[in-house]
Image (cartoon, rainbow, N blue to C red; front, side):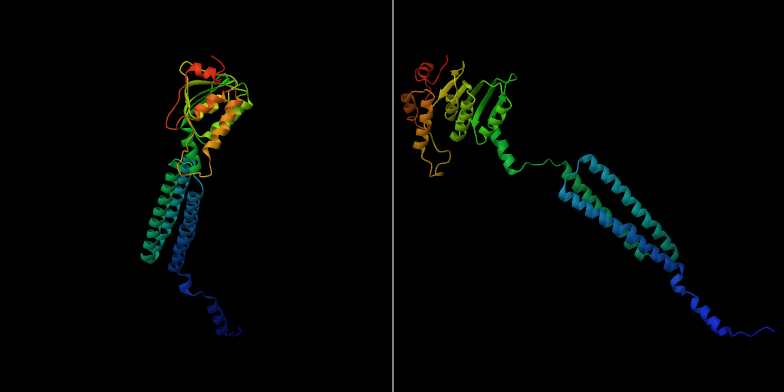
Amino acid sequence: MPEDHDTSKTDGRLSCLKTDPARTSPKRLRILTLGRSFLWQLVLPRIVVLLTWALLNSVITLPLRLLYGLVLLDGILLLWQARCFLRSADAHIRDTGHLAPVWGGYLAILFAGFATVTLWWDAVLIASTPVEPDYAEQERLAREALYDLSITPDGRRLIFAGEIPHGLTRRIAAMMEDAPALREVALSGPGGLIYEARGVARLIRERALDTVAEGTCASACTLIFAAGQQRRLANQGALGFHSYVLAYPGGLPQLDLKKEQARDRAFLMRQGISAGFADRLYSISSNDMWFPDATELRDAGVLTQN
């Protein structure tokens, strides 16, 4: 005989296995799909990309070709993100008819696009703007613009023309190191800093180089000229002398001009220049200039060659 079974418990157990319709409805699944697309395909990747762009713009200057390549790749990624979200949005509208979350996603896409383009533009401006040298480099370039300095192709003559600024000794020393065949230094210029002229004069004496005044060599330039082992005037050459003056009146109160002149007077005499000539040149006012002729220069030992 068929047995009677109490189906009430079985039905109860089966009813417990049924899923809540609200949790498995297509509508609920579509909402989750839209949310996941918004979070994982749009928001989080775009935040990572934007932070990367911001970091690159603040740390390095990208080469333009590399930058354009990265912009192209990021543009493709942004279009893919928008396409993925739009597909989820279309499915969401078909299933639910709710537009509010979709419009929120559209606004997020617009904001992401605007932020991305802004960072692209910043990167392009940074990459295309010439890099300004720092202050020290600007000062060095400004000083080097005050004179011309070169070595002839045969490596035997160093030609200097212009003012004598800070840093000249260091630059000439570097050039002399690369010119072992150097024999003569050609000079012309209105003068400049005495301590730099002393530095260049020391380099000339250490290498036993000759000097020639190719143009007007005046003031501190004559101190460099006097360092030559053999010294001569070119056809257009002239030497101009006067006493010292502070470049910045009122500054360097510890500097005694008379002691400085006495120091260089002793140097001139060691180079074979007469004491009378040295005394006369330091008696000339710093506002004037004395141009002795070739005969006076030869008689005083300033010139050693005709």
